[in-house]
Each structure stands twice: as C-alpha cells, then as structure tokens.
Image (cartoon, rainbow, N blue to C red; front, top):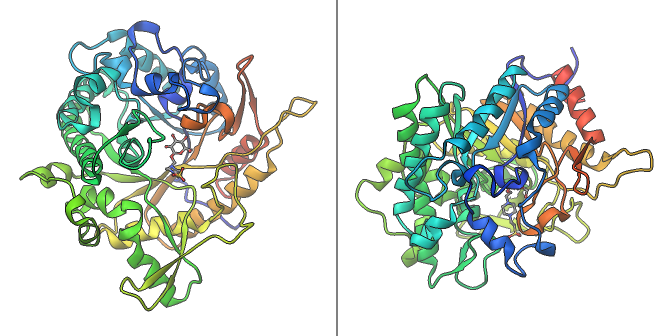
Length: 457
Ligand code: GBH
C-alpha cells in the first residue's frame, strides 16, 4: 500500500536521561553525582547551568507520561540515577530512591507504555569519585554491579528491558583527557592515553558484570542491551568500492573497535590495537570473557556520520571533510547525514559476526533554534525535515531485512544538554524553564502521525 510502511511489530519510542530532566537533586536522600559537582564549577557548562531543577520531571512525571500517551508511543527509554538508589555509591540502598522509579514505572504501565531502563547515563556518584576516581578504578565495575543488583531485584518484576551503560566513550574518553580539560564530568586531566583507555576498559567490565547481575537477580525473563554511539562511516557514493571502504573504515573510526567490538565479539579489534600500541589498556586474564556477555540487542545512538571513499593507501579509504556550508543542525558536530542510520545498522550487522543481533536506534534527533510564536506554538519544521529524512533510512534498513526493531527519538523534551546547559534544545516537547510549561512542538504532532500510520509521513 503506502510507502515507508513499518512492520506491525516496530517499536516507536522516545528517550531521556535522569540528570538531564529530573531535577530534585537533593530530594528523598539523593546525594551528588559528578555532574552536580562539575556543573557547579565556573567555566564548565554554558551559563553555569546545572541539572538542579532541569525539567522538574521528578515532580511532573505524571504530566509527562500523559504527553507520551497522547503522542502514541508504546516505549519509553529513561535512565535510573545511581545516586538516588545508592547515594554513597556503595553500601546502603535508599528505598526512597527506588520508590520514585517504582511510581514512574507503574504510571507508565498504566498507560500501556513499556519501560526501557538505562542503568547508567553518566551520573556517577560523587562519593566514588572522591573515594577512588570513579572510572579510573577497577573497583567501579563491581560497585556498578552491586547497584544493578539492588535495582533489578526490586524493579525487575515490572521492568524487563534493561540497558547497561549509555555511550561508554562519553563518560570515559570525553571525561578524562591528557591534552585538555575534558568537557564532561568529572573533567579529569590524566597523564597518558593509556589511562584514558583504562577508564573505558573498566566501563566495559562494568557492562559485563552488570549483565551477569541482571541475569542473576531478574525475577522474570528479561532483555539486556548495550547502548553505544559508534562513529558511522557512510560511503560517499554507493559504488561497490566506496561501500567496501566504508565497511573497512568502521572498526577504525572513533574507537569503535575498543567499545562495541570487545562487548559483542570478545576482542578489541586488531586494527585498533595496532593503532594504540603502548596506549592500549592493561587487560587482565578473564577480562574479555567477563566483558563478552550474551546480550539480546544492541542500542545505537546515531546523530551524524562521516563520509568515506575508497583510496589507494594502507587503510584503503579516505575520510572526506564536510565542505563549507554543509547543512547542519544546532550543534557544531551535528551535520545532517540521514544515511548514517542505515549504514550504522548495516555495518553493525555485517562486521560484528552477529548478523541476527537485533538493533534498536536508541537515540536520534537534533537541536534546533526553537522559538515560541505569539500564538504560543513552536513550529520546528527544520526538526521535522531532519527526522523525516533519517527515519526514511531506518525504513530502508527494515526493507532490506536488517534486524532493526525500534526507534527512540532524542528527546521527549528539551533538557539539560550537558556542557551546553539549557542553551540547546533537542526535545519534541518545548520546555519553558521559567514556568515549567510543556509545549508540544510541531515535530511532536508530526511524529504522532508517523506512529499512528506506522510509517514515515
Ligand atoms: C547523546 O550523545 C547523549 O546520550 C545525550 O545525553 C545527549 O543529550 C544527546 O546525545 C545530544 O547531544 O564536541 O566535537 O567533541 C551524543 C553523542 C558524542 C555527540 C560526543 C557529540 C562530541 C563531539 N555525542 N560528540 S565534539
């Protein structure tokens, strides 16, 4: 019948993260995360914004869930805050913290919306930063697993879709750096690249131990996924040579070979290890087995891509710079490359030796310079333009038989955009931060129509 139709089973959703929306940072026993500490320091976030109040979702979740229901999504991806559950990072469980997520989940389920919970979206407990430098220490992996045990044993009767860690590189390689002050919390200068790779290795161990903990304590069968933001290599033309070049470039790009490869294949990619030499992390006996746990799906967060073409050099490929004036959305890194979704799904499926592994787009979306009109609307036709083009390439992947199961737009609502504070808006719902009023944008209404018709409109 109509074009761009998705299968009936396709899962439409929206995503958020705890520190970016909840606020209420001192309530019900929560203690600081590294992002509270970092954003309170001068010069770390734009306008010195912090997540102290953010969207006040902690108090307004019912209203937000009503907006999800009106949108028509049946799947909601959110994250759980470690420092609400175990405020000191290790030790006593704060039942009041559990209660918040329990209420949230019950409310979601009363609207027939399936919860997909991310167990860690960058907000490490400050207490563990003070104790041993958080991800610099191997101890962080076991503390994470203990926190996971606390959550899953209490909420696992009602949450059956678990995501371990969101975008390992963003809270390791963007948080610990040798040459500059890192843009992400805790913002630690370290002496060597090897130390940086050690932090992501510890995060991989946390993923592995976290998976084991979930399987051990979940009271019912559940699904586990790892969420990553691989750099996506897109063939400049779709000639056979450029496609081959883009595929070969994939394990080299942005450390892909050091995050999803070990998690899915049990090995750091050989290309990456050659590149790293002495900067490679120390890997203890058994680590790769711990990291390489069976998972049920891979979540991909994709916003943009890099164009690649075939070349006569040792790697057989060339990275193409974006020309001046290339279309981009409201972030310096957010060039519009719609095919990045299609190629992300395809490269994962073809290069990780797991062609059947289900894939979700766990984040895709963009920042735009939204303004409220006199009549009180936000008409973000630019975001619709972006989303429509990207979704069409997800459809292409479905059409060609790649195992892509669902799509979560980033984000349900405008929120604390990390070092950019509230200056950048990624939501399909506008937040007026002075009044906390929610205004569904035009893109919200457009997305509702896609969901209703189960196709890209
Ligand atoms: C996601 O990360 C996050 O999961 C989410 O919390 C966030 O709100 C959303 O994106 C929007 O940013 O500054 O040139 O070094 C996206 C992955 C990885 C994209 C780091 C930007 C930095 C490029 N991001 N990357 S640069």
